[in-house]
Length: 184
Image 1 (tube, rainbow, N blue to C red):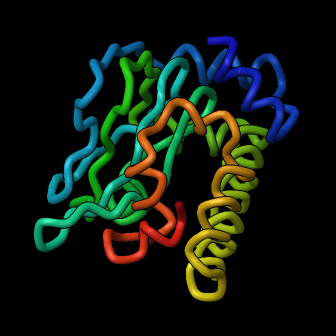
Image 2 (tube, rainbow, N blue to C red):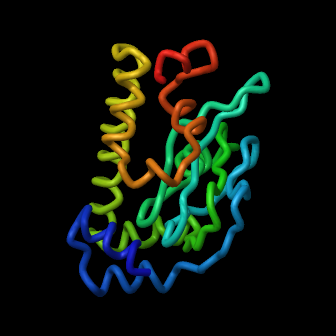
C-alpha cells in the first residue's frame, strides 16, 4: 500500500494509529483493464483507493463519452452522488489499465472520520483539493483555446502522458472531432 500511504501523508499528516485503522478496514481487489468499477445508474457505497493503475470517470450521454477525471496511483475515486447523497451515480468509473485497488465501505470511512480527527482532516483537504482542481478545469474549458487546454492537461498530469490514450485526454479537456485537428 505504499502509493496509497504516500499520497495520504502527502495531503495530511495522519497519525500511525489512524492510518492503521483506515488500512485495517480496507479490502484489496484486482480489476482488469476495461472494468467499470462504478456504473452510472447504480448506487455504489464503496470508496476506491488506487494502489496500482489508472481509472477514468466518464459520463455517457447520447452515444458520446465525456471523461471528467483521471485517477492514478495513490488517488481516491468514487461515484460522487452515491458517496454524498446515497443516490445512483451519474458517472461510471472505468479502469484504463489492470488495477490493484483497496476499497472501504463509506459507512466504515464515516465512522473513522468521527473517531480520528486527522482522518477527517485528510478527507476534508482531499475534497478541497479536488474541488479546486475541478474549478480550474471548468474555467479552462470556458476560457482557453483547444490547444492550450490540451497542453495544460499534459502539464497538470505529466504521469498520464504515456499511460492514457490521446483520445481520452482530448475528451477530458472537452475536445471533440470537430476541434481535434486544431490540436495537432
